[in-house]
Length: 150
Image 1 (tube, one colour):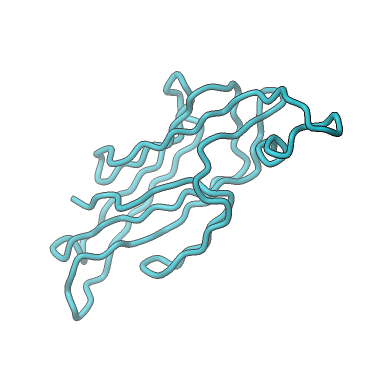
Image 2 (cartoon, rainbow, N blue to C red):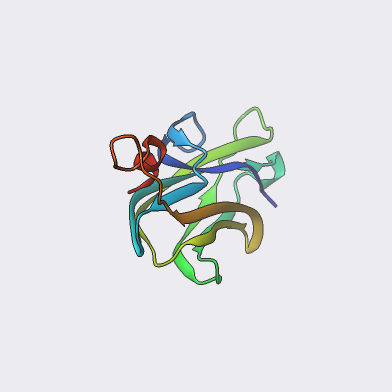
């Protein structure tokens, strides 16, 4: 069964499956808000699916689930992915990016993104959604909170 070579959240990402990818603000694991519900305009999920030579030319179902602290679904997506066999047969990493638009987080807490391959959970990413209460020198949000507050 294909495995996950890497997976992370980013502010933005661009990918051509099976080729290089570009990322802005990779490694997102926290988002802050002044109040709830929080509507976050955009996140990107980047996944590198490790496919062995024997698993090429077969379809694999990849499911993404974003869950709140109680396990309720906030967002989901399912895709069928197949890596085409190349003349120089070898294990490969198939990279793809998924755009997550206009996510709404009703409350804060420890959220998660779960990645399932062929029905089996292969990766779990943490995402902390929290209130920001600090002030910067100008009386507004601190520079770090400006980036986090969407």
